[in-house]
Image 1 (tube, rainbow, N blue to C red):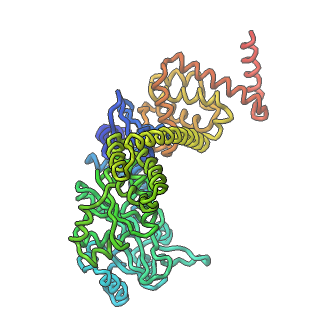
Image 2: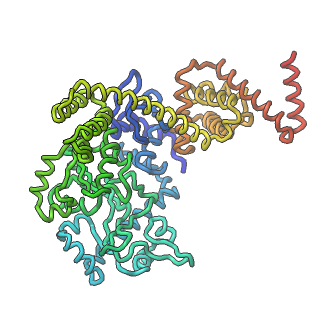
Image 3: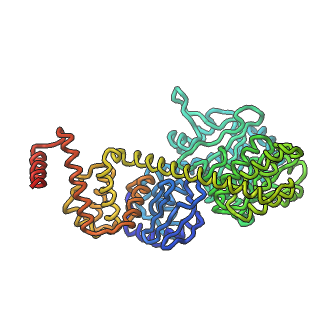
Length: 585
């Protein structure tokens, strides 16, 4: 639903893009602009740029771009209205009344309400006779009633319809229950409960909303865990379990675990800054989320092969964010939950204090693969270690660890550093090739999705995009463009739609800025539009240039029309022939 321009204008003025984005991304000033690591894709070289003069952002790596509303939509996984509501709450503004009827926003709200009711239901079942088995399971894990209440833990009875019937009585429709991933339709069309005969862990976001659930079996049957799928209220990669509790202690650093149960055990033991990924492997989005709240993270994964693989993956992803990484190795292959139950919180605290940093951890793990008491083993180990050190961005780190390895293995530090520099050059070349290939591929993919006609008409698209960028950057040129170029002469549909929107706003005396386009265009489309504006900033804009671009577009339209004569009326043919005669004379 459309929002008044006056409201959007005040919203933007109270939420300047620099202050909003800087609360998610570490930005550094570069001339008039600011740059940082993109929060929407993994990268080591900053390609995410803020343009304060146009209140916009653009990533040269993945093509993400837009205004502050588009940024919040992407980073918080919200639709347009909820992103506006998020920024309004941030600025202490009241939303206009007529936004209540927005269908997507209303469904998202109903999902959150249904989740809250389901969480209460599961928790009440836990302390009822039907939940005896679930309660005993929690007690066997050592959880107290206080911990159970604190996390809102529950139990889903072994019944196909008990939650469905309960929520139906509360007024929830079947389509709302399926949208919330609480129920599912069978092949015969009957609705049934997804979570059955499992202990239930509610997933709560940082604003206190129940956004999803995790369910664990009470024995060793498979699948051990059943987790909510992505919904309008939940996206696995945008959330961390228990971050709603841990954020208050994030200044002390966060502890990253593999699963729910480890986190709950750590919180009960007093380590209330523990979090975990949600029903999926650790991702770049999780790493960037952690970096928004903490400058230090300690990894506490299981000691098995899967845990070690997960640790390496988390290290690689977290390194790109610049956070300080520590790694705990739990003795005897125990997981954190089991270790605390056997040895208590004090022993775990000692492990925390003795945690190796990520480089030390990886060198230790690497050393376990080779026989360091043999010459061949040391050579192979040092070659791999050189590759590891080559990946460190800090020359001080490289020098310190090279010196340490040289001393421990009786080799020349200079020779080792020479090997490291050789590997750095190789890695840098490969990284540049990968990044360039990725940028080109992503740019082409986005262009194909947004404007599929672009590849067939490169000259027309170049002129269309140049014209549109200038008009958004300099709205006073719109009048000149409208006099010489009607929308129907645009060659590509997407650019025509954008041009029509600009003309409509101009006719109605409305402002022409990126923020006022966000309600009409998708996040990817806003990225493409922002790129047009960014490129327009780099060239000289004038009315003469606007007219020149319009002339190119009209000629390309005429050529296209001649290639498809069936689309032409007699009047169109007459005008084309006259134009061609005028051109020859």
